[in-house]
Image 1 (cartoon, rainbow, N blue to C red):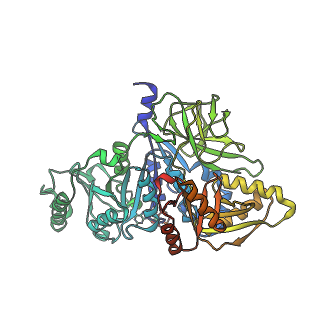
Image 2: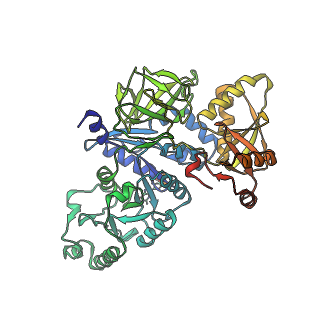
Length: 533
Ligand code: G4P
């Protein structure tokens, strides 16, 4: 085995996805504790302070030095190098989350057993499905009276259009929660609220018929477990690892993160099941991690961490080969050479300068405006990685410079913040000076205004626009496309990659336009092949 293959097989790069409040922060913290990446509970910032309003964002801004180091957390666990990517909890920043998911090889989905599948989970799961990302499911908060576990599994299958295979099964719930039964190992894990699991809490049984089960959890819950297990065997086929790797089947675990119950087993399962770095799809071809030549892409840019300097950190996911400090690489979009003297890794909660990194790793590159989200670095080949789509925003505004004396600062700030992915920018085909912003949530507009003022000394105001839906359009029929553009010019915008975008004000009017123009294809993301509307 070459050094490259060895390093690839050691890596495990994943993100945790959930609806806010399901327990992502709690689980992240426990995982980091097991991995020795942090030593005290409470060290991980909850996503909550990004939740409510601009004032919270400003407070977060002051803590940026902290938040950046926790957005990628690397640590060693059982001989594996684990990279855990944090994704913003707030729905208004969901684009950032979607892009983050392009940089991982698998996901851990957390579901609150009381609330079941929620709106954000649905959306995030859809993104994972688009990319066939394998998902492990953790159903949390079993210490509370939640939904029936069978119903929860049905809900996950139905709402998230994925198949499930329970690996553990809860015994009781809420006040009567006694623990979980591991269906794969025939092992009982006994629950003691708030306590760390001791060796005597883990009991190997001879299957569910073992009479010790009755002694340990009481005969009524033991009978219920036996009935459940029989039902499960009838309903679910046996688990095939390949189905999970292909993203069609999700192993499910139950537990209570707050009580430290089931999280270590979850992490162990991830280490055993989750794929090491997988091939990444580029427009030109599929890129295998084992390829000798280095390649990687930028999926996130974090700007102005220090207000005194315009410094930005670009987050690079390594897709193939070995990355080396000081080596000259090829910046595909600009066609220029690129060399970095101070690449950083995100180990534990610190950033440290590294000499090399491997597929699956995420490194920080100090950036002085060289990068845009989606940029690719290679050793000379012209490839463009896919998976960094722009999503259809839901709120559109015309942005206007409010201080004519600060024209230059306004444009510079707007462009840089758009490159960082704070907002999407569109322009009108015949009026390039009219800039239209598209965002997913109102908070993004407030953040843009705040940052333009504080980081660039510019001010802006917004004018409403009558449209609230955008669809990217293409057609192999050039004439039909031109005709459509001519007839609908008032409703056409152009995105930063010069793609045509059609605006509508309701689902109904969009559907009518679509059915009247069968020669055109309409897409809900900029990554057109995968996202037909
Ligand atoms: P998030 O990052 O997904 O938003 O969720 P977070 O971990 O912050 O958890 C949301 C709330 O759910 C927190 O309570 C947390 O303590 C609680 N929680 C997490 N896991 C469990 C569990 O297994 N059982 C129970 N009963 N609760 C759990 P909070 O009151 O909102 O915050 P805090 O004051 O406890 O921090």
